[in-house]
Length: 393
Image 1: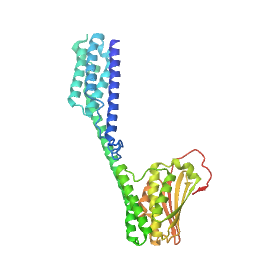
Image 2 (image 1 turned 90 degrees about the vertical axis):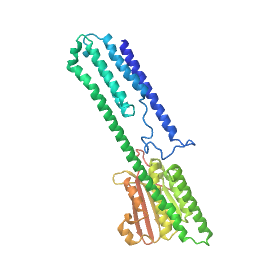
Image 3 (image 1 turned 45 degrees about the vertical axis):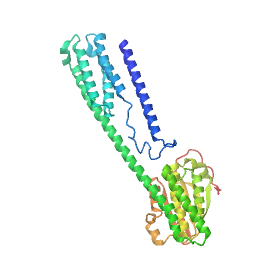
Image 4 (image 1 turned 135 degrees about the vertical axis):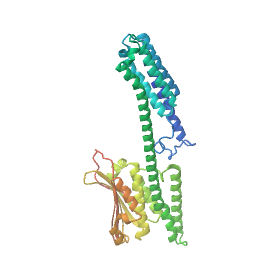
């Protein structure tokens, strides 16, 4: 009974100690990732740097207490168990193998390898000594179950350490892949921004009439917006504040005004009721594509008015799609460009690919005097009934 109480007490202490260490590591990692002003650094995310803080939950104290207690428990069997020790010690072997397993994982996490080697040898020697001191004498060491126990300690220590190191390497590789994907996504966002905002502003310098105060004021506003968006991206990893779908639509309408483009937004009640189901990442994707479509109107269509219709439609499978349609009465796309498809349109090809990766699409219909650019993207399903269609400006 005393041995059982000691085993339970040691196990409870070990679990509590590991839990405290884990909370401390999480707290230290959070503090490290916070900037001087208390704002998290967007480039220092757990996904981007999964191995930034070395695991220290299994420390030297935990290893020492657990492994020393394993040796002590084995020697205690010489006092409390009878002549059939090899059979009576079987439940205790489960505990000692668990302690060897923890030591193997700790060795893979950075504990000195000698701790694992010495501990394994000490536990195996203690087990052999306790068996040999029993009524069976040293001959008992030749029993198959005893031999399995002795060799199992070494094999377990080796396999657990190798397996833990393999899993750590796999985690590091996955972290590197995640970081690469994150960097690729950031490069895509930056390319879109340079084309849609900064590039558009620079092109406007070529067409400006220096004698027209309105054009100069409009260009100044566009330059200020481009500068603010780049500064926001450098500081937060985002070009603008994340807003819901409806807010994004009105933000783009306001930005178009700076480019002397008047956009009339028509948002159906279906969209108002389902806007919360459009994820922030989806809103960002639609915003970049919408911005590119509106810039094309102002730059290439030869008109200064457009209509933006936002609706919720269903695809062939009945899934909900948010749909943004930009319509203008400009000169339209050249027939040779339309013949090659959206992929040949430098300003829209990237957005078409990004939307298709998420299950959406970018379609263009254009003739002289009429052009429509349609953006679609699936949204989360909702069991509630959508309200009937209506329009709100």
